Length: 94
Image 1 (cartoon, one colour):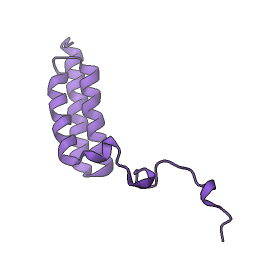
Image 2 (cartoon, helix red, strand yellow):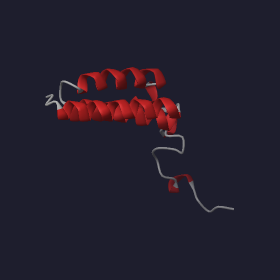
Image 3 (spheres, one colour):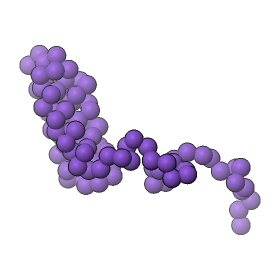
């Protein structure tokens, strides 16, 4: 038996990533489809405009897909984002 009380529990994220009290965070509002669209669009933008920012955003979206939704799609978006970032840096985009 545990000797903890309600005051001893730490407020914040639970094991499922949701905050206590049922409040949704901004990331909870986006699903796999939204992260995929944002990731692909930002990868194409990364080739010509601010490659570090948009390529990083694309890779982050891929990571969120990988972590919460679908492994293969997440890896594909991460590779696309990192490739676009490298291509943008090599061609002098931004």
